[in-house]
Amino acid sequence: MTRLGHIIRDQRGAAAIEMALALPTLITMIWMFVQLAQVFRATAGIQQALGEGARYATLCLNPSVTGCTTPSTTNIEAKILASVYGIGPGSFVVSPLTKATSGTGAYYDLKVTYTQATNLLILPGPTITVTRSKRVWVAGD
Image 1 (cartoon, rainbow, N blue to C red):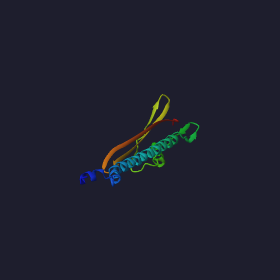
Image 2 (image 1 turned 90 degrees about the horizontal axis):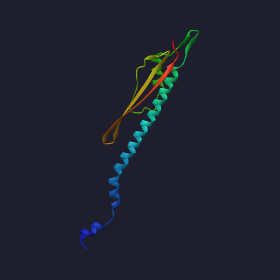
Image 3 (image 1 turned 45 degrees about the horizontal axis):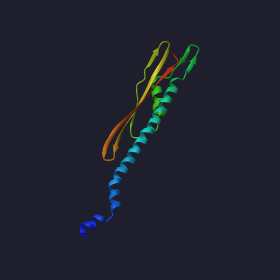
């Protein structure tokens, strides 16, 4: 038997070489799942903040015989910012609010956006943007 034939049939160290080839891919995939989990957690957090802002916008402050005073846009935005959680390494933005009317009803269109840049350990990954919006009908002033 030639020396080359002996080396080709020798299986010692094959598992180490296979692991060296597969391990970087496995680690990268696990890292991608971790980053995706961060985005899902942030999505839950911004949805919670949007809901809290919507609930706060519908409150009747200082009720009187002539009607209600609704919270100001600044107070609603502050409530949204105070209620957000889990936003991790990304950025969270509350779009400016304006009160609009339709027929005899008034409403706010609440909109929040979360943006997170991802990476694949060595290479940059995609930037993920999640936007949620909600229309909230409020009492008139």
